[in-house]
Amino acid sequence: MTLDIFLSRYLLTVHGLVVAFGLIVYVAVARALPQRRDPPAAIAWVVALALLPYVAIPLYLMFGSRKLRMRDAPPPALPLVESAADEAEAASLWARRLGRAMGLAPAATYGALRVHADGREARAVLLELIAGARTSLDICTFILARDGLGDEMAAALRARAEQGVKVRLLVDGIGAWLGGKLDLKALRGSGVEVVKFVPPFRSILRGRANLRNHRKMVVADADRFWCGGRNLAAEYFEGDPAKRDGESLRNHAWHDLSFDLRGELAARACEQFEKDWAYATRTALVAPCPPTPHTIAAAEAPLAQLVPSGPEQVDDTVQSLLLSGCFMARRRILAVTPYFIPDATLLMALTLAARRGVRVDLVVPRRSNHRLADVARHRPLRDLAAAGGCIWFEPWMQHAKAIVIDDQLALAGSANLDLRSLFLNYELMVAFYEPADVRRFAEWIEKERAGAVRFEPKEPGLLRDLSEGLLLWLAFQL
Image 1 (tube, rainbow, N blue to C red):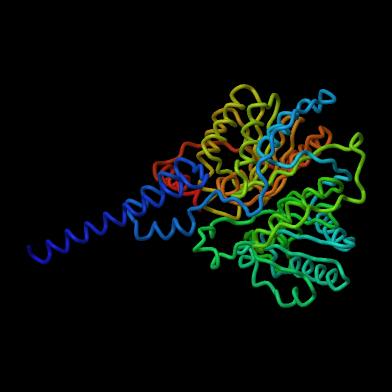
Image 2 (cartoon, one colour):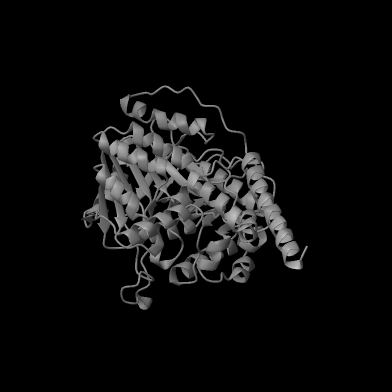
């Protein structure tokens, strides 16, 4: 046997073993953990492991996990048998029951809801909430930027910590890098407790580097709650006029949605923060947050439900509520999102709703801050338009995330209508069930839509169609 024949046979055998090892690892992880991976993503991983095992195996070990159980997470709660007091409450009963069946905390009372008109009001309310905190202040954000807005917020947090308020800041490990290097020394020196959620270089070997915390919330004294889609950076509020540069989106004010409220729902948000904090710090979960001092009488207060989604949830909670909402809708589905890359199931639910006569309005920016997302969205946009849906392109960068189903349900918070938000990220939405407040969110979206132009689909060329398909195939993992 010549040397070249021996080497070729030997290398072929080694390569086959590597491929087999990669596929065995994939099957073992898929069976051992509740991944429930999207079919195109599963096919992509199998093909990559078979053709490029030396690259795909380490990438899968670092980024392949999708569902994990958080330490000390309680088991899913059994669904409650609830009865509706009136017709309006009965219309949203399906959503509350579904939430409970997925193990979410029950709907809670709230009051003093403010849906912020713009970034200026959102900033003023947030500073007011921070200044008014008496004992505790918990902040979770994807980005805390080193710019005018971020520095203002950091200074406000330092001031409250120096005055004796317990201040905790949870910022995503990747987001902390995207916003510029945080001055952790100054924050911690003032008494602010700062933790990075899943720092990428510390979590690669644990397979969690691709799981980002995209939640945005501020809770003061377990009684006041600020939430929405805004990161703590200038463009999400009023922009930075001193640094605006022509047509670029950077430093211009984006349109975004945030809201604040108080009451029992704020205590639920405090409990969610405690779970995220315990996971990020690898410590035991502390006792539940104390009752709020301003609890509103249940008979007078509307109900809303906290909807966290992400790897720690057994079910894909936001996705499940959206799917159910599409099938329960009778008159209208109104949605606003910066990125529209749904999975096949959600796209089918939206198109079927449109085909059976439900008015489906989708508001998106004409050009977002992610060019690849803008390219990938055109195929699902064409499918939705062909089914009778109305897509509206806004001239500004729209970063709001909200979905309204008739007058039954309004979902608002941090989750985009894309595969990463729905299946990979840690997200936080709030489900509002009070018809009057549902209409308030619908009116906010309608006001934004007033300046939009209707999307007119065009048949793509071959190259465009291929590029869209490739991006959609890879989008779940990006």
